[in-house]
Image (cartoon, rainbow, N blue to C red; front, side, top):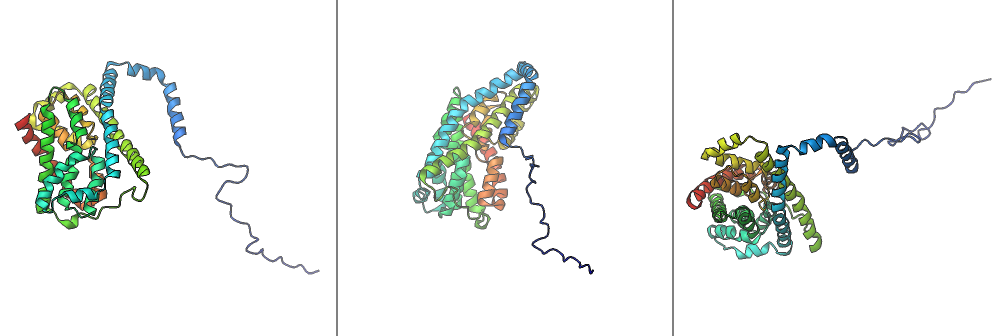
Length: 345
């Protein structure tokens, strides 16, 4: 009897590769950490370590730290919320073409007018960058748009009011901040008008909420600004509390006693902390070891150039622009602050 060799199975009858998912009866474990799981683990860790945490919080250094941290947050938060709401309202309901029509046709005259127009945008620097991008997109001369970008976060009424509250015994600080910020913004605009190259500024991207309803755009802008500005406010309050409670006072006193080092130190601190302009006055006021001129430098530099602003300017106008604009702005802001402080403070 002949034995016939079985034919190989057809392609569609061959054993299919195992599916990507787990086999039945062997559920695949999801090893990703989601937010509820992280929160649960943190709460469990806090419960397990409650005695050491209680002892640490009871230490005099931590009590001092918490006092400064909470004080800065409580003082700054109302101005931050008000500024975010007004900034979102203006960004959504006031068309950018309004600013283009209001500026003079002469670029040299448009720079100071745009700088002074920064008072109509009661928001932080996070709002000024997209508005400046919209101005450039609608044909406004870049020098005027840049002057508006630099002045708006520092001379608007919300920021000046917060500065007056933070320095109740030094009203000249409000005048100094207004004058120094406006002078630096105009000087930077004229400098760009003279030496800047148009090809360094790329066309800004379209607005994030363009095409959506007014309500959705408004609340989307509010959520964005609250998340970003609020986070930077917390970081700034933590840094101020750390400087006040942890860093040896002799170090701060040594830096504060040298006028040059004090100014440069607070300028660098403003760049690194990236605090929202509606809250930075309260952080500056807590640095009691430093001179008024050094504090003014902190208030002028921060709204014009810091780490988050550099990233936003790079994303809006291009890296080539930001690499030239940021160092020049920092240098002018320091010089303008020192000169203004020498005259006014």
